[in-house]
Length: 396
Image 1 (cartoon, rainbow, N blue to C red):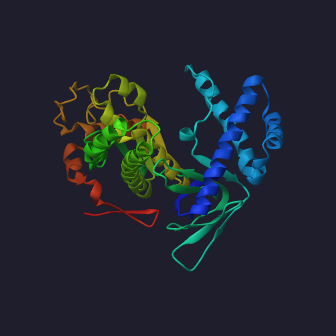
Image 2: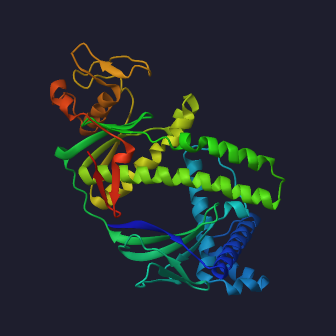
Image 3: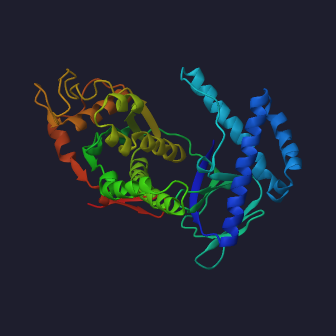
């Protein structure tokens, strides 16, 4: 089975190269908007719109200086967006029409199949050659595995450039090792509590940067619209958001890698985040936790490692006793599960055990509370250390 894998590297273009990259980005945006305009005039097939690019080039000769494949990809991007809207509509969602892209909403251009090459040097910087742009320095901090199929170049709001190199590799055949299985309960204070009793604290990224972010956002709102100072302040705000994103991504990658490396079968809750945000007073912390993103990382890492991830309904996993299966009602502020059968453990630990049992189809407990207690272990976010790109070590 073929699977796709992405490798992300920061690019360090010269001023001349950055000018070309910004121009390429603008030309791609122009073509995308022109194709959308043609589509809005009347229903056209993907092939018909592809031919429209030739007409757009004739009307705008400066487009001849851009790499043809990069411009052609915008037709694929447009129809990919249309397919996404169609899926949402089929699922009962209210959707509108595709919007034209402004400069702030268009940040990526793509080289598909051709027009790129990685040049390895014996220096700190390797180079990524892009047709019509040149050899752009970057640090290959991670070796690339598989056949390169695509290069996506993105400019972040902070002004930094990154390249996502998409490769195709052979996936491992999935083998379920139910002996080495784990259930995972996701939360706010304890980001993860698993069925082995191990729990990881939630790193409070937003709390760390919230004061600085508020200050910079206040400064931004006071700047004159369309002024140079407002643009500078916009970059400062973007850099803080980028730091928050990088901290969160680093934690989620290491945590998901830890579980994929150590377990053959992983059970998680199938959470509906949108509904939780609507009814919860704790919506900001739920959004900051990025549970959906963690599960996505867990799934794609598990797919390449041959590990099975199963989602189960989270209903009543906290209320049901994992030992005797009776319902023990408790409020959110009750953090301990106490049952008449004698089981007294953390409510999240109880939930994690129920999640695993639900995934495996078990109804009866296989161990007593006395047997479970020595397994308890607490791990801080700082105790996670990633070596290279694939190995996660946990400090004790």
